[in-house]
Image (cartoon, rainbow over the protein chains, first blue to last red):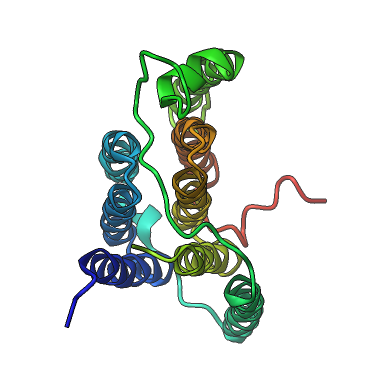
Length: 181
Length: 100
């Protein structure tokens, strides 16, 4: 029997991904949640490889799996340990969690029915080069990014710069209880 | 060969799990991590449809989305750390100084 290894890899990665993300949202301890988030992000990156997008995979590993969990873990480590504790909820919280589970399950069911319905999704895909020097069809990511989306790239640079400056401003503490320099 | 409908199901599942985290959890940093999961679910769709249609715009949007998500994580964490310093808690049921 012919085994479709790509599909098998997709199913295994999906199981890891969903299990990891469930562990992120139900975890009571923040550091463990951050490391489960790292697992989830790495497996999402592997799915990008299955979709022939190696460049996005590299960026995902560098920015997401590398930086975001480290940022969270350092943020938690630099504060006191009490930030990690979440006191046990009473009946109101239990009721809210139950309601949210029902609502989210209903949303997922609706999406699943519409996705598995008679829709003509693309049956096959093509790999997109990072840079296409001839600039004919299909064009590369870099051609598209610095040609059609050059304003978006500049805006993202401004957003990142102002975001980082704002983050440093907010997190800077000279004395306890005082925010900003 | 991966059917695109299954990828959409995976993305929907990730989005719903993240939505549960945003709506049900009270720890603000867990809410931030759940928002990261939801953003990743949408970026996964961009990449998959870019693969399916052969159009590089989806991958460009994925890159821009990753950059926005990184900035959002940094600023969100800084905001919650300073709320923790001034209020002594990041329990979202207790932080109500924007409500009156």
